[in-house]
Each structure stands twice: as structure tokens, then as C-alpha cells.
Image (cartoon, rainbow, N blue to C red):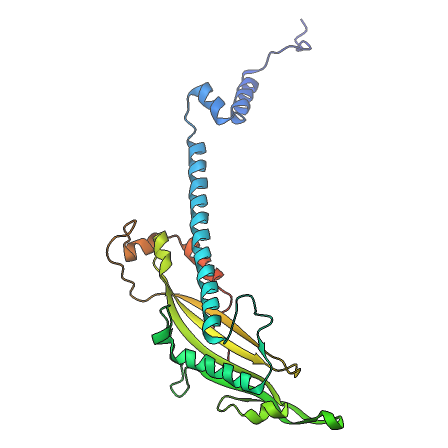
Length: 279
């Protein structure tokens, strides 16, 4: 008799049938597997839990990062109102002076308000001591051409382009003679961002490196004034939180519960630059 399989026959060898069942079961959805064998979808539940954990962590990171950025931006606005005389919000590109008296008036205003920080400001700020004991906490420097004489009446000038940086005195003769390029005021302040307690996080300590620049490099009769703020974020030393707020906070124990990914990403974003710049 002819033992060849009949065309269209649905008969399979046991091995083939077993392979078909395994393949079909492999491509089943979790619900179909549950109906077929009553197995609970443990892997599906595990994946959902993992997604929830990652989502919660992203939300926490977003909230913390938002607080970091907001704290820096609001402090920058505060510094502009404190140290830039007659500053108005949104006037960064137009804030300038046009007379010699106004240049010195604005310089004195910034220095006087810096000295009055402990008694005048609403925010809680602290001075930063310089690394060099012989250096002042506030650096007032000027850059100017070594030699220069400009005489528009006779259409003549005599300029030595070598730039001199002087952090000892501000000489008004450089401004009158047209040799002045810029004047900068550099200092640092410390603050603590305690609003992170809302998210049950240990507050971080901030060091603001502030540079106020009186820019005369265009020599157009318009001295532009700007304030730049760079921030360095560090963990506070010996944090202590007592009592209860909306939720109980345990200093060291809670600090270790925050994931390394969340904390590390937070510190890497804050900035906008480390360290502090002097001329």
C-alpha cells in the first residue's frame, strides 16, 4: 500500500504536534495563557511594577530638577535687583549707563549692597571666604589698554593694544582717556535650598559665583551692565531636621533611600558651570 501522506491531511507526528502547541502557547497573550493553563501572568505584573518604579523616579527627578533650576533663576533675579542699580525685569539687554558719574555710582551701589547683605536681604545668604587669606572676598578689577590717546577733533589716536588687568584700584583716568575696556566685580555667596523638604529630600547647599560686568569694549559711549551667576551644588554638612511636617523625614536613612541615579542626575544638571571666574 502507498504510505505517502495524503494531500490536505491534517495528521502530524507527535513531535510536530508538540512543537505546534509550544509555539502557539509561546505567542499567546497573558490572558490567553491564563485561560489555557490558569497560570497567573507574573511576568506581566513584574513589568508593570518596573514601569511604575521608573515612572515614579522620573517624576521625582523632574520635581527636584525643577526646584534646582527655579532656585537658581530666582536667586539670579534677586541678585540683579540687589546689585544692579535701577534694574527692571526684562532689561538685561538694555541696562546701561552713559556718563562717567553713573558708572561710578553703579559700582558703589553694587559694593555697598554687597556689604549690607546680612542686614538688608530677605534671603539668607552668607559670604564665602577666599582661598587665599590675603585676598579680598570681593574682587573689583578693571581691564584697560596700556597706553592710549584718542583725539577725534584731529582724527588721530595712539593705542598700545596690550591689555592690563588691575585688581587694586579703579582709575578714573582710564575711563576719561578712552582706555578702559571693562570693570568687573566678583564675589561669592552661599545659600541653602530648603524647599526640597517638600519632596522629602535633604536640602542642598549652594555657592553662587557672581560677576557684575561694566562692558565698555565697544567704546560707543554706552557702558552695558550685566550680572552672571554660576552655581555650585554640594551636600550640606551635618544636616539636621527635627519634628514632623506633612510626612516624617529621617535625615540619614531617607538620604540613602534616594536612588543613585536620581541624585546623580540632579547634581549633573544644576549647572550651568562650576567654579568661579576672575579676570
